[in-house]
Length: 217
Image (cartoon, rainbow, N blue to C red; front, side, top):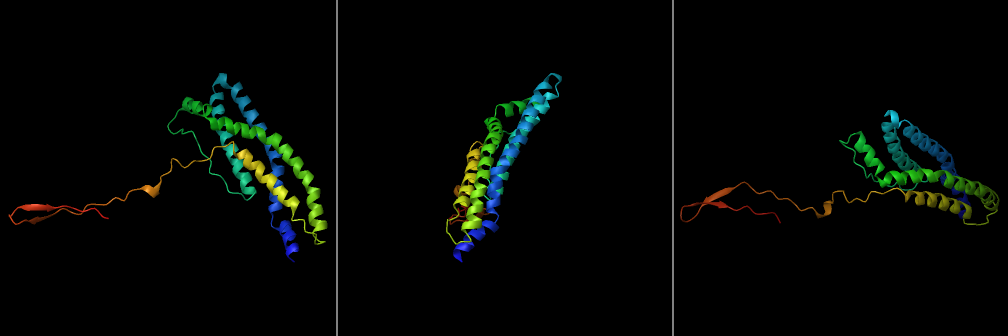
């Protein structure tokens, strides 16, 4: 029963389907990425002489950054992997159109996001081919060997998961992660003690003397 339970889990827990989609989806998403990026940049540059291209280019650059982050987080969620906390190296609060455009053009995250989106199509084509080649092996292992109680340790399923997660983790290295340096560290905050209300008393000479407040320990 232990062996049957192992391969039945692979058929019913949904992880195998998520892994296969994680290998197959990048090719189709990559086609969409190339269409949006090339179309957006080309249209923006062609419309720069009539000024409307400048805000359109700004929108395209912001969209490239957002699309790359969304794609990576979506793929990691599909694979049931921890979603990374991605950083944002551009602060556009209070900046005008020209300043925002300069910030996005000068940001390394913008160009790394562009590389990320550009790689999704060629890498997606490779991973989709690998996913198709693994399908017959998975069917043989799960539908023929497993009912015969031949314990293969689900080699094909483990390989499918390794390839899917490894591919998206490798792609995720292009996107900057939040370092936490700007976050408030409460572990080293000093305790603030408030002084008590000032009190006074008469000493032996009849003078009024203030009682010094003490800090808490």
